[in-house]
Amino acid sequence: MFRKTFIERLVAAGHVVVLSGAGASAESGIPTFRDPEGLWAEFDPTELASMSGFLSDPVRVQSWYSARSRNVLRVEPHAGHHALVDLERLVPKFTLITQNVDGLHARAGNRNVLEIHGSLLKNRCVSCGDESPPLDVSPDAPEPARCECGGLIRPSVVWYGELLDPEVMREATAAAEDCDVFLSVGTGAEVHPAASLPLVAADAGAYVVEVNPRKTMISDRVDEAIRGPAGAVLPALLERLSEVS
Ligand code: OAD
Image (cartoon, rainbow, N blue to C red):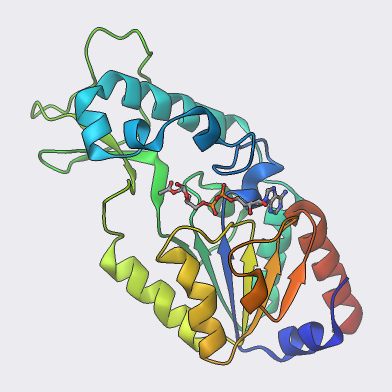
């Protein structure tokens, strides 16, 4: 399943970076976005993942994110998440850049996690910026949830048309430039700037590997594409590493 070069590069690596996307959480029971059964097949991102959609129907948006945050708290990290915790323990330096907003990497036990698209488990006031825990708003709530200052409360996730936190993105880019091995796990690599990170790593000389059951936008640019689900491939990779080290 794994090429010899990949295992050799991994064993010798000083810095390993993983970029994860929605597919990395799929086997925990969290839907992806662009697969046939994904969220964007059923829901319109312009209504649910943009400031204009939020302002035109805040109760709908708050209740949708309330349901998603309840769902992520109900599920558990799977064997693929746990394998990434083992990988972090094994290598000298490890950076996990995630597009996922479900908090599962941190719950599994990874320590150096950059949540570049924010978190479903955090909210903030659009007026004063005060942070608050997950909301519990039902779709038929008469009024949207508001902060003490009167401002609307929104999820701390990055919406379409919004910039990623520049400091977090600077760290993610620096990690991609610095690493020896870069794993892109469970992302279709359609959304930038996240999708350019594997290419930044490749240009800087890293060995880039994709883990995904299907072909993606970057498949032709990676050194190795492993076609399989994260929950099977990542534990198998750790197993292989334990045999050689
Ligand atoms: P997508 O839904 O675009 O892609 C999910 C990828 O996961 C696809 O390439 C699938 O083939 C793959 N996949 C499915 N099951 C898998 C499994 N068990 N193991 C490994 N891979 C699997 O999700 P993202 O690439 O994460 O933005 O999407 C990027 C961003 O678009 C998201 O972060 C989100 C969305 O709009 C925000 O929330 C800001």
